[in-house]
Image (cartoon, rainbow, N blue to C red; front, top):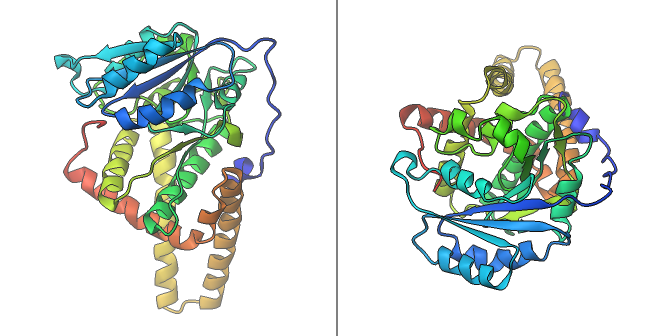
Length: 349
């Protein structure tokens, strides 16, 4: 029920600025030559008057540098940042991003990843329009490309929707705890007020969610759920790749504020306990009609909420198997927590 506020919230009309403020679009790339060949033209085709495209080559060993420099030679809007590995910050995306941000010419930043395709030519415009009423952070939605007939793809997209339900839902209540680097924006003033990523520079990943976790307040955070402002990424193609990705995300959550850790932990524990209690009561045949009735009501309400969010995020097909996906995610999360107790993931790529 907590998330119903976001699920049923009507889209607020975006208030246009008197003039579109200039913005720096920042993309950090590591061994992404093929994706850059495809996506740089899409970023350059955004319908926006004044923007800079900061392309960061994070010590790539493929042709990323050559691809970036070729495009830069043909378009003056592109700023190239070539990063060499630094012994103190070896393999740190935050170090590479910091160098790129320092080359940003404008006071508003929009971030995405090298494999992210804008959903429309108005993506940049709509993200920037959300900086109204003194907002300094804009949380966007980063979808994953649909692959027909793939159970893994359906699970990945459902988990992405459910994660979005959580971070948009908490933000709707003035308690934003994370954002996704596939589609995120914030101001330079806020970045420097937070001393950049210095408070969590030792954590290899988390340039997106740890920054939002530290910097977001009830008044400075906006949501952008206009479908024109979505981005779409290539999903993982194997379970092993997805597991590695999710292990990294769960590990980063250990560095959230204690209050956010408590709320998220309480949510997952309540899910597990509800399922276990239902199984125990049914196996004991303890007032089983009442237990079944409670199960049905609970799943119906949650199904409606998840369905509303899935429709809002243009992912309606993943809502139909909600009860099965929820059970899978409970088991999946437990396995991830267990794996991370044994060994912690380190690098962003």
